[in-house]
Length: 300
Figure: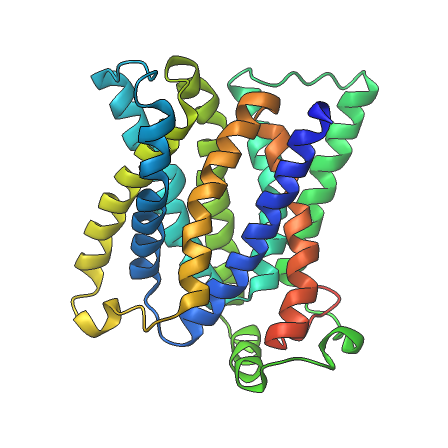
């Protein structure tokens, strides 16, 4: 069972991400500011992780050098703050299903970055090398199809849904001219996220306290995202969570997800984690159709 733990953990991670796709989209469609949402997501995740980090790792954690702190700061800024802010804008322009589908480019991005940094080995003459090449081509072709080809609707998925109002809003977004722009933004976000996954494997070698490492990243990201949010939105009414318990619960679970990702990266590497992202698409497809009433098309 011990050898199967990483597989169970990545399934849990992708299930959480699928839920966050839907909760985030619903929040944005009801007027919540994307930048404020990212700040709350990181701040609450920090508060959630902080007591566990102090209780389990504070006494055993290595000293945090200034250089390591700077590495974690920039890791948080590009891999979390910018990635989430850009991703949220892309999600507004598209749909939860497309956002999850475009994330399938993450294995390609992560693999190429890991290859450049010599974390992964690629030999085209081996069966493993051929499999990796086929996977790369399939991912790129799939994401390109999703961005450019609309296709007929799959009525059997979108015939029954739980929210007519949200369905109408999402259909408007699907037919807008901003669809491709949203795809490009999600891909840019995935590039930052892939870089974050790869570089974490370097930082965690010099600072192996995973829980504290994750908490510090969330804390720094909350400060960074607050600065961006307050610069963009000064209206205090926009900062109210409006008692959205489901959204709040999803934000809290985000902290757990960061820790689980760090654990998987240490055990199996960044590419293994990135390879699990298609599971979130499958979960999001059915959830988007049944819960939000999104019309799922053959291409999109």
